Structures are given as C-alpha cells and as structure tokens.
Amino acid sequence: MLPLESDIVNLERVWVAYSGSDKPAMRNINLRVSAGKLMLITGPNGAGKTTLLETCLGLLKPYRGRAYLFGVDTRSWRIREARKMCSFVPQDFIKPPFEAYTVRRIIQLGFAPYKSIFESLTEKENERIQWVLELLGIEDLLDRPIGTLSGGQQQRVVIARALSRKPRALYLDEPFSSLDREGRKLVSKVVSEYVKKKGATAIIVSHDVNPIIKYADAIVRMDNGEIISGDCYA
Amino acid sequence: MLEILALALLAAVLSGNLCGAVGFYVQRLKITTLSFSVAHAALAGASLGLILNFDPVYSAMVFAISSALILGFIFTKIKYGRELVSMAIFSASSAIALFAIYMSNVRVLATASIAVVLWGSLLAVTVQKLIILVLVLILFALYILAYRMHIDSMLYDVKMAEAEGLNVQAHMLAMLFFAGVIISLSLRLTGGFLVFALLYNPVAAALQLTRKAYMQLFLSSTLGAVSASTGLVVSYALDWPVGATIAIVSSTILLLAYLFKTATEMARKRKLRNVGGPGAI
Image (cartoon, rainbow over all chains, first blue to last red; front, side, top):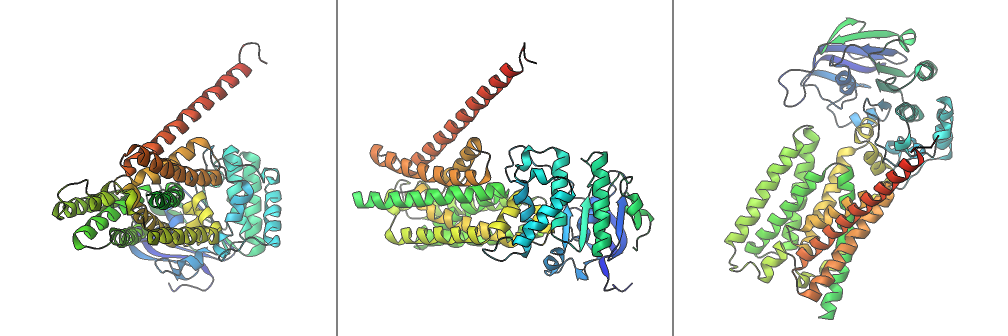
C-alpha cells in the first residue's frame, strides 16, 4: 500500500533482529497509524511490543521491509526531524536515588531538541510545564530531585515531559507500570483527551489493557514477534 | 628551572582540569571504554611520532581524533558489542605503541624522548603547548555552555534524548573528539599509560563526595587540577617520575574520598539506628 500523508507510522513487512541474535525479534509486521488515533499494543512478556515501538521511532532499524515515521524512512538522516514531533516514555524510566536532576529541569530538557545554541526556555514554555504538572497532580514536586521520588511519581514526571513538548505523536511504553489505580485512570484520561483535542496520535504498549481500553481506536495483540490479532490499520 | 616549573605547573592545572571535566562527561555518557581506546590510540600516535620524527603531541592528536571519529561512527551503526570493538582498538593501539618504541633508535627507556610518551616529563611543556591547552579549554567550555540543554538531556537519559530528535551521535562524536585532543595534550605530562589517572580518578572521587551532577563536574575538574599540580610539585621536590607521582596523588585522593564517604555513611546509619532503636516510637 502507498503511504498516505496522514500516516504517522507506516511499517511495511518489517523484520527486526537484535545484533548477535539469530532469531528475529519481530517478523513481517504491517502497521499503519494515522493522525488522531490511539492504538493499544498488548501481549505477553517477550512478545515484541517494545521492539515494535522502538522500530516505529527508528531507534531500531529493520533488516527487511520499510518503516516510515511521518513519511520519513527511519533509515534516513532526516528521521531526527520526524522524531522532534514525537514524545517517548521508555519502559525503564526509574532513576537511582543519587540522580539529582530536579523535576523542573527534567521536563525542561524535553524542549532541548527545539533549542539552538545558548537558547533557554521561553516564559510560555515554562507556563506550559506548570500547567501539565498541575494536570497530572505533581505540581508540588517541581523542585524535588528525581531520585528522591517514588516509582509512580517518576513515571508521572516522564509522562509530563512527554506531554509538555506538544507532540504530534506519543509513544508510551508500559506507562501504567508503576502507577496506582487512580494514577492509571488519570493518565489514561489525560492522554486520550490530548489525542482528541490536538488530533495527535498515541501508540501505547501495555500488558495491562484495563486503564486505557475504552479510549483505544485500535487494539493490536502481539506474541512471539508477530501480530496475532487486531486492527493493524488505525 | 623555576620558569620551566611555573610553565609545567600551569600546564598541569589546565590538563588536570580538562581531564577531570571530560572524565565526568564520558563517565556519565557511559563511553568510558571508548575514551580508554582513544587514549591508547594517542599513545600509539605519540610512539609513531618518535620513529617518524614528528612532534609526539601532534601525531598523538591525529591518532586520537581519528580513532575517536572511527569509534563514534561505528557506535552509531552498532548497539551491541561496542565494548568489544573498543577493546580491539585498544589492543591494536597498544601493539602499535610498543612496536614503535621497540623500533625507535632509543636504547634506554628513561631517555627524554621516550619518557614524554611513556612516563611523562616536566621538561616537555612548552609555551606553544600551553597556548594550545588554553585554547582547548576555551573551546570545550564554549561547547558545554552552548549545548548545555542538549548535553544535560543526554546525561539524564540518552535513549529518551535520541527518541525526541536530539542529535545524540554528533554530541557523542564531539565529546570523543575533545577527549582525544585533551588526552593527547596531557600525554606529555603524565605519559601514555598514566593519563587515565587524570581522566577517571577525579570523577570517581567526585562521585564519592557528592550526588549533584553539577557539583560532580566541578569537583572532578578541581580534583583533576589538584592531582596534576600536587603530583608535579612532589615529583620535582623528590625527583620522582612526574606521571607516576600524579597517578599516586590522584589515587590517594580517590582513596580519601572513598574513606570519607564510608565514614559519613556509617555515621548516618548509626544515627538512624539510634532514632529507630529500642524506646523509639
């Protein structure tokens, strides 16, 4: 199928393997996600969910097939420009107790790719950070070092960083893993509202589908590196 | 002689400062093994300079920068087994260095030309080299200040920074480039085998003393300068080899920092035990 202009992600018969491994981590994946959609990717441990997310962003390159992000081939050097329109919440976000960057600084750093030399944040950007923190109920953590926060608080901080950047595409890898029930509800609501209001796209990897399933436009189930069920075109 | 000592002292402070700072960044960016290979490439370059009659500093710089660029390029292409690649470059560079020294016409390892490459020499510092050191210091400081947000973002989480569209590869290359240049310039003072004492000991000591990233950077560069200048003065006073003396001073500082951390940690735990002990609510 020819890529459409509205496609945020387009994977065409993609195969991915980690170097040194003789077995592909992902096999023959076709996936297309357009603007304004929320896609949920689920499956057991080792199914290839994180590999899929990282392939969409071009952090992993396919050895067979083609992957496009905003119409840009992920092998192209222009992929960085496409990534600037994306936010990513990694699975391994927890920082050790000695990590001293404050919450404020960590969220400000999300704006780094938009900044040229010697440039710092504008008043408007700082106001947006404050607004997102309030939205996620962590405004009182602003000047706390990240290492002193609990896992759930740290997870909210990285989600706040992702949303502050006003991305056109959100890639969230297990965004509920450290959150309590209320936190899961809140993050699901905030993310789905962001997608609706801004016409953005969200691809969420989660083995726990409960918090977000009612907001999802498409659900893809993976196992053993393959998509085994669901709608690959959202 | 005093003029030479003053020149060497200034060079020691600048080299120590730069090595401490670049050591902090390579440690935080987890490219320590890369800088290790770059340092050995510098040693190979300096040794080849000996037999080809080039200034060892410049031949070291050419080798260090080339290896930094090659390693940086390879690292953008592969994500796993990177340490093995840098270890391969490390062993090849060491072999080149030893072959070059073997093939040079120098009969005794303590002669001045070999000492500059292997053990470091107080006499090896010239005004020209000092000016280059100052220029490198200014350039490095400008780079860090200009790209502070980009570098901080990478120090916090490289993967997240890359996913958000930051040019991580370019900054890694820049950092390795600076590491190569700084190692080449410090080589004259410490020698090729002991330059690591200025690169890694100060940052290891700083990590024992503070948890704040900016304080770690400040302490690492300060301890680097203190190690190099104290080592130089002691070596002059006791007529010891300069590189080895600097390495001993920086190792002693690291040991003291570790003992200080252990003592404060024990005191903290004792205080906690008293607070939560029998009778406490």
